[in-house]
Length: 205
Length: 205
Image 1 (cartoon, rainbow over the protein chains, first blue to last red):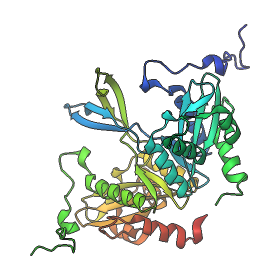
Image 2: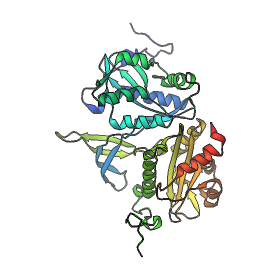
Image 3: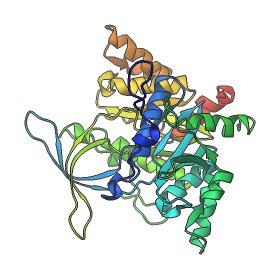
Image 4: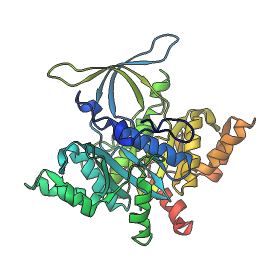
């Protein structure tokens, strides 16, 4: 049976629309979470809710051709490891900073999804009073959580001294905050930020 | 006469070290101001003063080779126009956002150094309570100023409706804030931010 919205457009179940991350390799990993966040951030900007952008992929440019009468072409470049998280911006004057990752693992979130540079950056942002967290998606379960950076940093540091290499899903459920999948916006993480960092913490300033 | 620091390293006059922007073209324009800001931001991070990074250059990647046993090589890519300013980060919990530009003009700062997207982004940041400004350098005069985004936005909008295509230097001196060139850090813009946006405005929160 085909369901339609009142405007006649076919109803598309978020779960049916979901494509698992490509197995082709690293480059495609997390693509769909990124798409959802880009759409969400665009919604936030258009509706004056928050100004958050994904940072461009860092690239080391080695060779550029300048053909006559057309745009410069980069002919040789390499991917660089990011020294910060991927997303940052402003919400109610405060600095917002986060990293977004997904896993197909169903019971725990592997810490290898993060780099030492990113954790170090998160520590700095927390020290300077910024709002800092990770958006973690269990992609095969369709579940997305916001986890404050402090928990991620603790688990990361424990791992460095021989602790476990992942965060159990149960712990993320307890310490983190579930972000329901929506339509507009798709991942309304700012509602969670508002509740956790502004309302509950008594304005956190 | 050669001057040395007490540690024996030669004293290098900031003015002597200054290289004028290359005339080779757009790609090199502003390189030295960028160098100074990168060094300044590194100093701020290392000394726990603020966390500010330059965003990577946005690049549209078209073709990537994945050679066996070596890193992926980007074989075709193009420069994209940035949709935001180049620098952002956190200082005392607040969101900081700015663009940095230099001109060899000695009497006025041409507005063509900015793109419509950047001005639009600045308007949004101001609307959301972020600290937003431009760092403007008159490179042949060795003078650098911090100008609040509101002034830049006003002049930009006037230009759109037939107003002048540059901001007179006298106006920048009056409305902006001179940033002395230093050694460590080279461009201490955070001292100006502290004074203008935190101290003078009564914490601005």
